[in-house]
Amino acid sequence: MRKILVAATGASGSIYFRMVLDKLAGTRDQWDEVSVVMSDNAKDVWKTELGTEGYNDYPFRYFSKTDFSAPFASGSGRYDTMIVVPCSMGTLSRIATGASNDLITRAADVVLKERRKLICVVRETPYNLIHIRNMEALTLAGGIICPATPSFYSRPQTLEEAVATVADRVLDLAGIDISTYRWGN
Image (cartoon, rainbow, N blue to C red; front, side, top):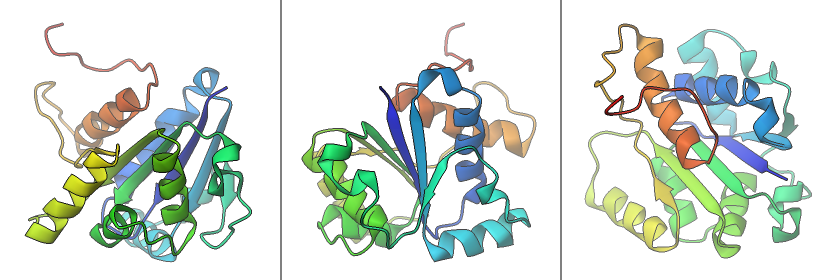
C-alpha cells in the first residue's frame, strides 16, 4: 500500500508543485493514497505565479498545516514517501534541526525517524553556508535533496517541458514508474 504526502512551502516554484500533482494524478494505479498539505505562503505564491487557486482541484486528501491529527503526523500512519516541493530554505532549516512547528515539519520529522523517504525539492539560489549545512544535515539524517534544477539533455522546448525534467526526477526518486526521457535511449 503506497501512501505519499506532498507538501508545498512558500518558496517560488509553484509550477513544480503543480507538475508533481499532475503526474501523480496520472499514475493512480501506483499509489493508494496521496495527501497534500500547503503552507499559507504556498497558496499565495501559487496564486501569484500561476494566477489561479487550482491547488484544490486534485483528487487527493487535503490537510491544514495545523492539523496534527492528520494520519502522517504519526509513524503509525505508515506514509512511505514525503515530497516537499518547493521546499523553502526556512522549512529546510526547521526540518534539518527537528523544529516541528507545523504539520509539514512534523510530517518530515516522522518520515525521517521512521527511516522512510523524504525528498526536498529546494528552490533557492545562490545557497549560503547555512543552506548548505542544513542540506548536509538533512542528507545525513536520511533525506534526499533534489534541487529544482532542470536538465537539458532532452532538449526541452517549453517551460513546461523543462519543469517536467525536475518533476520526473522527483517521481523517479519516489519510486513512481513514469515515461520520461532516459539518458542513453
